[in-house]
Image (cartoon, rainbow, N blue to C red; front, side, top):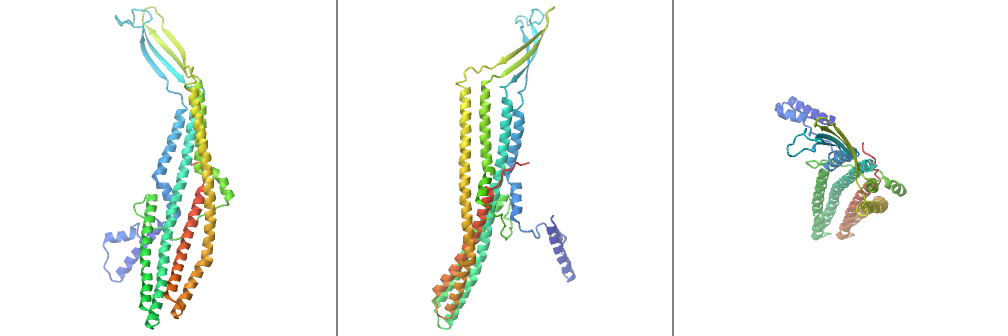
Length: 436
């Protein structure tokens, strides 16, 4: 139980003591214990940083990749070992008319041991290849973790946008209420019509539909956050916008692209495929099997026997097998290299486009904050005052009211999209460090 929850429980406990002092009867014991020790008495809102930690800790996909890395590391040790030796037991030159071991020479029981040695250097190369595959899976894990964080940030920022958008529309309701009051005042003084009052009321009341729509979008955003965090219920999130790190310069980001997990994974795929070429070339060398056996002869006066031998595979038709294996491995290596080059170009283009969008959004947000939104608000105030004095029509008031709402919502959209662009640039510059 956290300190915050304990303090909250003590707060409820003190309220219960105060109630007794005022003369209220004591609460039942289960209710008192629930008030004091409930971990949900005052749960603190979840921060984005805390949500990211939960996502990285509880996501089942990342857990599966972690086990994949462990699997490949064990495999890298296993594939580099010699194959198991073979133990042979047998009866040699046994006469079938009597099955007697002591009536004929050379009838014996034998025990033998054989060991196969793959082509020279093949085991070491296969072990290195499996180690590269484990490293590739490690970069994949880092990349998927970064993608999960980006997905969470997008949903988080969208939820904050809808939260602030609801507050903005509610504020617009207050402005609409001012228009309604102004229309009523003119109508009562016989300077305005009842139609203008109804139109002002309609403009105010129609905002309720916008609020309902935004609230539904917010519920959807929170449900997506709960899904990412693997939580049974949507969490209560902090209402404060997160301070995401500003992106570096475009030149710095393009330099850091070489360490991006997606590219590191593609790079490791190329290395694995190139190692496959070296392994395929080992097929030109024969496999060697060394065997030794001992035979026990039971015929009187006959000696026991020792046998030893070497067995070689004969790659005498390389054009149909070894050459084809090497050609296939080289084609696979080229395919991996082309994929790496294509992904590098795609990430470079995405980085440049996202950075350009980030700069544009920052400029648009600053312009809206400093000029457009204040001007729209001043225009509404001036138009409302002119209408209240009977020198302007209601259409001008409603139009300037709508301008204020549009610019306020556009400002929130710029702020959301700017933060999302910063999150995307942070993802693109994520480095694929090795996991411990």
